[in-house]
Length: 173
Length: 98
Image 1 (cartoon, each protein chain N blue to C red):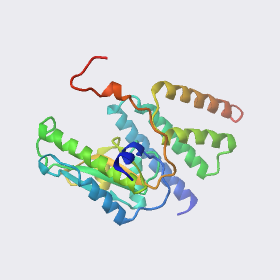
Image 2 (image 1 turned 90 degrees about the vertical axis):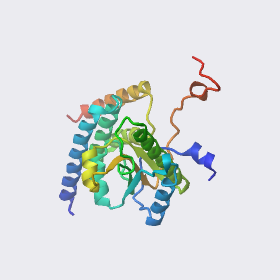
Image 3 (image 1 turned 90 degrees about the horizontal axis):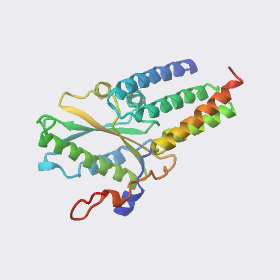
Image 4 (image 1 turned 30 degrees about the vertical axis):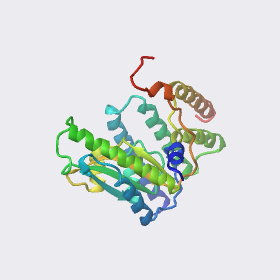
């Protein structure tokens, strides 16, 4: 799949079949995520991949934003040993943006591998920390639910380019 | 695991979902509230379905709720109209049962 085609056709998939995802495929996805650019090449991330059905069920109870039952969940964590300044500093903000890049890379890799994925930001952090046994220095900043799609969702309503893109200077509209 | 054990497990997980939703909604966008309640309705209906408690009219509403759960998020105006329709249909379906 061409990159622009992948960007154009990717959807947030929230309903999956019970078919599992192979470890090799999951490793390819994490490798793709970890290929994202990172500020200062700090690579301030860790990826926790969950495949056990029982653990996924428990996670599902702690992730209100996740509707279906995925085959795998990847927690993208901020490694505070590699981004040790406090929230509100440029370093911290850049680290979060870096995780966003990793997320997009993972989502696109999943789409090109014919998997459906959804990025999730609504979850109960203490419960996630407990279920994943996260050490103190890893903060779960994003979760990606993955699986084989039941169907390709419709495209959401998108804001027109004329409303969001400006050349040279911003003109009030 | 027998039927009763599975139901108990699903109920435990559902309570977890409700508790973490309650906590999350304190900080999350206001528009997430309806989504969480729709999700809860969908999860309860899925449980009822597992127990063989849904007939055709209830299945039809479950299917429409699932469409909202799994589809892209809608603009508020469209969502409100959809919720009104679902709520009214539910009211009418249960009128002969309750």
